[in-house]
Amino acid sequence: MIEHESQIDPDTYIAAVLKMYLELPETPSRAGPNDRKTAIELYRRRITLFTIEGAMLLASLRRLGRPVDYPRLTPIRSLAYFKSTVEELLVQPIPDDYLGYLRRKVRVLGGEKRVRKCG
Image (tube, rainbow, N blue to C red):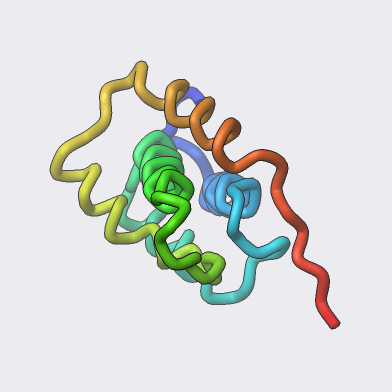
């Protein structure tokens, strides 16, 4: 986590959000223009990187933890996918010490990021 998050410049913040997004399982290998717009919107709203990372991890775990006999979900195609979970965490924040747990669970359940091949 970057110290003094309220004073991060927009480019650093946006880069951090997009990096977190792209490192998740089931997300694209590169960000598109709409992902950047969503990151800018989150910056303008002053959503902390802690909240964003927590939302991304929590939403990913909900997908990864689905029972195996449920239908497979399509890959996440947009950073906007996580906006509803961001809103959820603004109402009911996760404890500071919970982020490490979420990171470990995503790593275990998600494994290595699968790179999708085009063509």
